[in-house]
Length: 428
Image (tube, rainbow, N blue to C red):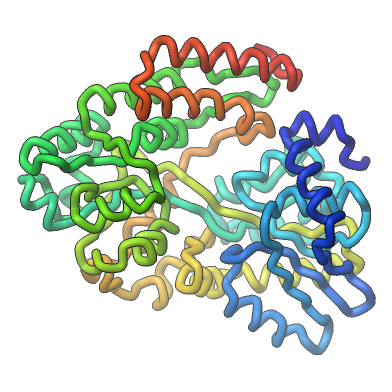
């Protein structure tokens, strides 16, 4: 079955696909697919370790010509456009984790990796991550690359000055509930005026939702974004605003980076890949940050997959290459090169991942992210979650940034969700 326009629309992809099609028509160079010994791999910058890709080309040079192509811009849209157009389709394609739910309903466009022997590798990967690459009918579309366990990044000296626990183990133990976490934010602001524990309320809301086993739509295509798990996350985000522990800054802006550098924003909840964001964004903070576990339990943010498209002429060869590139040793290299935290627990004890990190005061960051990755709660990944979660995220942001009345914001979010659900055919 081809990806129909209705299928794209129901997955929330019609607009992006149309945009990508326009971009391709205007002269974007798209590589041709496999011909003979060629094996075309599509991914995005930072999606795989450059070292591992280079080594894969050398390793398989005698049997296949691996042609890795980094696709810029709207990656998902360009991949969908090639599939719907049935031309220039890569043999192996990266699938971003946040887009996975949109690909799964169209599993018939990809090789079922179970038919190539994927099951024998299952025990080597995080079970929840493995399951994210499987469609409702059991088809395995994606083979796990990485994951994004979330932890608490904080500045050691600032916490100590504020009279808060400051050693990573103590922070993990003593700030292990949202109430204790918020109380720490109040104490921080009282002891060091002008400081804020978190950038915005969204970091509370989204992480609380991600900590649970439910999102916005269930397997039966019922909207559940008005239920207790989302309401509780909303209430905690509103509480963070009320207690004054969040800033008025916008993530990623120069003002936010300046606040981090000066110690006015000494704390954040971030995924494993945030280690690289902090190093690159505020390099002058070297040695000042530490990492602890987040309150209650870890959540996950990010992590992607490799797939084999139906256009691939040599799926067995492609699968052999994927399993090699994504084995424990190469996933460890991916973390060193690009911050891609391994979905293979065997990687965590390897020498590369047990090196003390001077930027984080000599801390072995894997000792935080490894256990966190193994405690992630599995949630159903609906293709409609993005569309039906966005109004709620937009409205909680309005509460945090604009000071909108929380009850009005919730009502507006639910009204928007009702309209979108009706349009997508999701029961409300």
